[in-house]
Image (tube, rainbow, N blue to C red; front, side, top):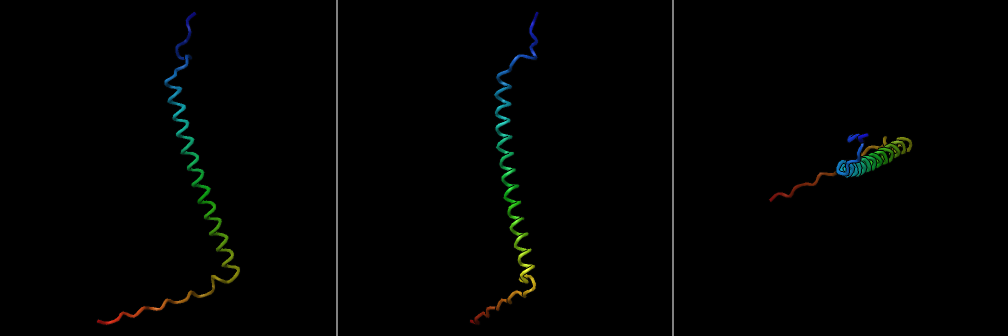
Length: 73
């Protein structure tokens, strides 16, 4: 009985798939880390907006900047 050549292990394909899996894992971890950074930034901004709203900071007018006069030559 002959063995099926499609069921034999291919070392080149195995190495290639291992490297592809390693690269995909690194990309996935970077994407997840960026998602966590964006989520924490959004939560911080949301909390700041809620605090500003309830403390009345949103209602306070912003101070106007004074214009600097230019000295004539």
